[in-house]
Image 1 (cartoon, rainbow, N blue to C red):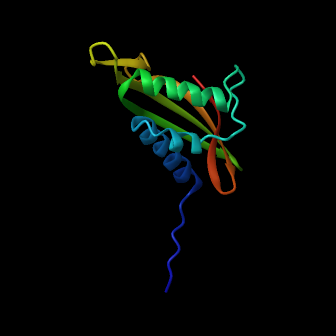
Image 2 (image 1 turned 45 degrees about the vertical axis):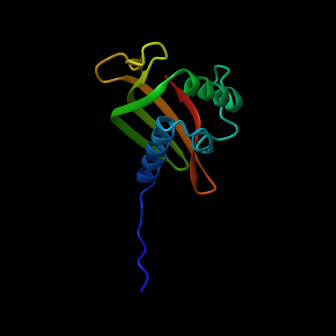
Length: 130
């Protein structure tokens, strides 16, 4: 007897976000980039290739990246998900290796809006706006 387990689309989007969080913390560039659509464009000149170079730069610049997401709201309309996150990021600076806040300067972090599209049954990042 086989059992089917239904996972909601909201849960799938959440899993994609958490996979991306872990990949960034582990400086796993191939996994990070696999979660981003090749047509990514934030409307301010950041496309897929520039975003990849940006991640490479950040991974070289910082060590021990830690991402905190105390608030997460996910809204799905058909094959588009809009995620409103409160995010703060800490990392060790390259000079004294002390942790510093590099994103999210309020106690709850700063708002980050992610837009994902469902393509070939996968949720991929297509836009991000701080």
